[in-house]
Image (cartoon, rainbow over the protein chains, first blue to last red):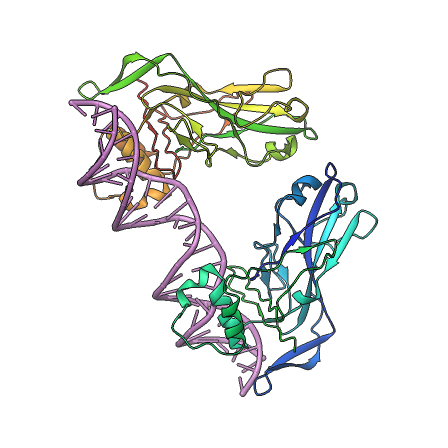
Length: 219
Length: 219
DNA sequence: GGCTTTTCACCTAGGTGGTAAATT
DNA sequence: AATTTACCACCTAGGTGAAAAGCC
């Protein structure tokens, strides 16, 4: 998933042990299609049937509150797939649907049911955070040239597709203005922070060649 | 360090937490030189002055006895350097000296003094294991063509130097016979196992360009 | 026609020994 | 003269979007 979700965490007990995990839940019960002439996502029917639940447990787990709070927690190793039979532990999603990533902070003593293949348990020792600006729509091919440009410009692995001489317009021009901008780091205590007007979140799946790319238009 | 040391561990308490670490200690107080016409390492004076102690703490630490015992514990990420001012946490050695790698199994409750920059503590909760067949001599350039050939043939990253059409003689022929041989996995309970007659251990240091290569001749 | 999969060139990142130059 | 360093081509491993091919 690129850009990757990155969070900063505050308010933990420094000496307590925690897991941090991410899952991705449907925003609604709809399937979408992208309408080119209006540059908008439109409802195109009801959602496909549910997929097996998957949880990405952050690889630094298990760690102390102190350790978690002293670093930016990045989910850049999280992989997506549309293959419902996936056995690589990737998060399974339907293409052309809207999704919300969630961050879970799980106290060790509440993690008995924590598994990559079961829904995250809920209870006193589990806190869940959703950031609405990270909602995205899954695709298997980009529907939106601004998204393509953003990904090429900001992902080091896509350097081979950069074309610095090109004319940039619209969102591309905005991105150019923010050439040194980095994904904002949200604090889980909901402190205020300045964010870009249009944050676009996209993701690309695993090397199993099932590509899932999200492009969300929020206006 | 290549080939990397790989061990299998038995006899731990499955529910206890352990660190596993490696350090590398001098075999004697001598400095060596390689005599080509006799193909032997000869004493060439007394050892250089001691270097700062460094411990490689296995990256899977801290883990349960159960976890450690269920995997082959490989030290392939351990780096060597001859730079006494190294700040990358690499293990510091003198070139042209003989060394013995040691594996330490450290119970969590005895690890209070465990640090990458201090000698491994000793006591009831710490077990240390040395395998004499892994003694090696450090070099900065190979002294011995059989060693060079072995490293090229067995290290995937050296594929570019392979020359499968070459005539192979002596140790090279032996290596060829063992084309599918993999470094033996020692059990720390000292179970018997079959080993190659001539195990040669070598290492190559970190990307700081301080190259340290060991070639040991045991006959 | 819309969506998905496969394959590809092009990157990042870093582990190899060779070789020439530098050091001692 | 011996040893060490700096740089290099050549690998492994894997993350990119483009484009072609395939599917429904």
